[in-house]
Length: 172
Image 1 (cartoon, rainbow, N blue to C red):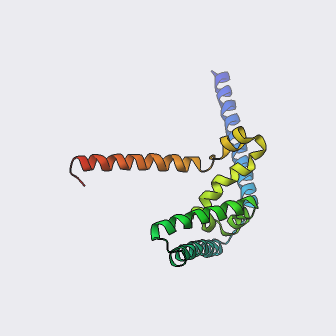
Image 2 (image 1 turned 135 degrees about the vertical axis):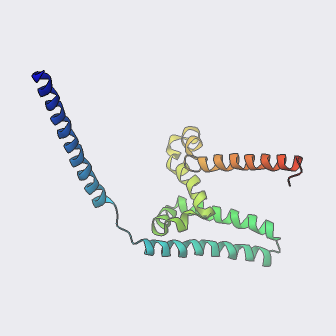
Image 3 (image 1 turned 90 degrees about the horizontal axis):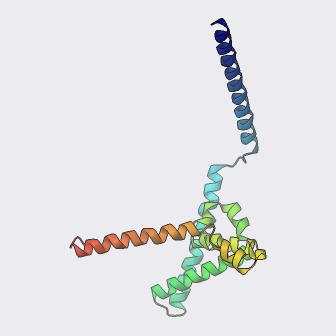
C-alpha cells in the first residue's frame, strides 16, 4: 500500500511538472506571437480602406456615367460595361503585381469591391501557370474564389427554390 501511495504521488508530481512545462511553452509562444505580430493603427487602416474603396467605387461611377452620357447606353448595359472594365483593370494590376501592393496598403478597401474578387481569381492563375494549363491554371484558378462562387450559387438556388414554392402557394 505504501508503494502504491508513493507511485501515485510520483505520478502526480510528474503530471504537475508536465503541466508547468506546458504553461511555460504556452507563455513563450504567446510572447513570440506578440513580438512577430505587426502593430498597426486600426484607425489609420480604416481611413486608408475607406479612401481606396471609395476611389474604386468613384472610378466605377465615372465609368458608368461616361458609358451612359458619352456612349448613350442604358443603365443596365452601362453597369455591365462598368463591371467588365473594373474586372479587367483589376486583372491587369494583378498581372503587373500592383494589386497586391494596393491590397497591402488599403486592406479591405481594395479587397471588398468587385476588383478584389477579380484579383482572387487571377492571382492563383498567374501563380500556378508554370504547372501548365490543366494542372496549373485549370486546377488552381478557383482556389480562393471557388468557395465564394459555390456558396453564392447554392444560396441563390435555395432562395430561388423557396421563392418558387412561395409563388406556387400564393405567398408572393
